[in-house]
Image (cartoon, rainbow, N blue to C red):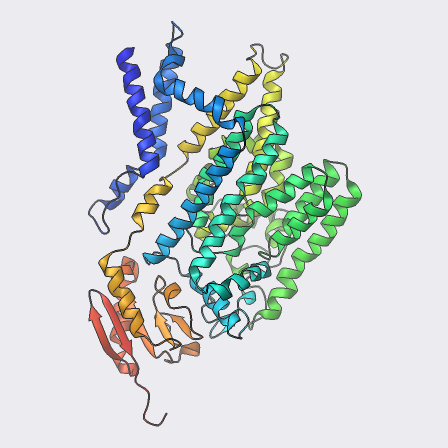
Length: 562
């Protein structure tokens, strides 16, 4: 067994190195890049380690398993680290720095999705007299208020900071910090739920920070809805403490970060009415937040939308195009509901596994708490847009607080059942049982962890090509109208007229004074179409002024009569 124990110790050290360093990062456009990247996935390696550890544990005839070096180390950490709150607060601060740094490096490496440009342009326009105006809103020709797409006014609290530091980096920094801060109210919730069992109540905020959907939301540009996890968790914390005023305050704040967020006030009101027996308060919340939820879709956003109506109902094909359509669909359109629900089952099953797997599927053991976040899960599963069931976008952010809140309830129920001799004949000592559950949760988190965050920290690196692209962008005059590719847009958003190439202006007009595209940033599926659009530019009056290393810059000279 000594040789096998040495192998386990080496395996454990290798896992730690992979988590800390991110593993091998292939150079951009390297052959077999995807295969090389898959090697860094933590899940398969952790699964192999768990199998070997389980085999070693069950073969332990002499009681030597606890003496293996890695087991002693983990036992020491479990005994000492959770004894005070300091290490958890320090980890939260370190993780916030990591999330922010990854987002900044991603932006500087021109790896964004383009949505950051919408909000940065809207903030820039706001401090220059055009309130939340953007020319990049999907489906809108020309300039419009971003409230025509989503109603998220709470982000205006960032405007004073933006006046001091007008940069997209401010937005991604605020998002990374807010996502990390959700660990604190979750820690307080867990401490209330499992008093005296530090290793168990400390593991939940650690799982939260490691959670793949949270890290994916952070890496998907800036979105106001990604700011809600700490607000919802604070609302849930004060709900558990029966402090209704701060609970409602944080629900209202969360509701001001996207038009669908008030539905959480409805579900919490139902929970208070049916489970906590606070019927008057619960029904009042249902009525007020239900009205607010309806108003956002039916009145508020259409008032800002030049075309009228809510632009995203089209994602829910086959269902009633109304605010409560996706939620009432099982009753009103049952056949259409199940047809949509089981569309792309493989993708949706993978999404569900990675949402609930990192918390060992404990939410299913607390159905009443799980139902609090059900509307957010349903809206993603019923959407025809694949990115709503992606683990690398912001759409799971509003679901995260309720996954962990119900996981706390599931853990409490599981421990109560295991402590009951009528259900389980062989009982474990309480502290040992809770430590085993914490170990199971940590293993589950790493099984569904995906790539370590430090992998992305190293992946998003600046290259000489990025420096040349930055130099080309500096050639374009500040404020000149511009058409460019998605990844470049957040770097040139400080102007009133900015368009996504091949769009050259509102209503099909070729109004953009400059066009810049970097061929190295184009996905393969778009290269032919973009090449054709670039070839047509001279016929529209544009002159090529730069063609270097895949970077092409066109300028449209001013007409003589202008």
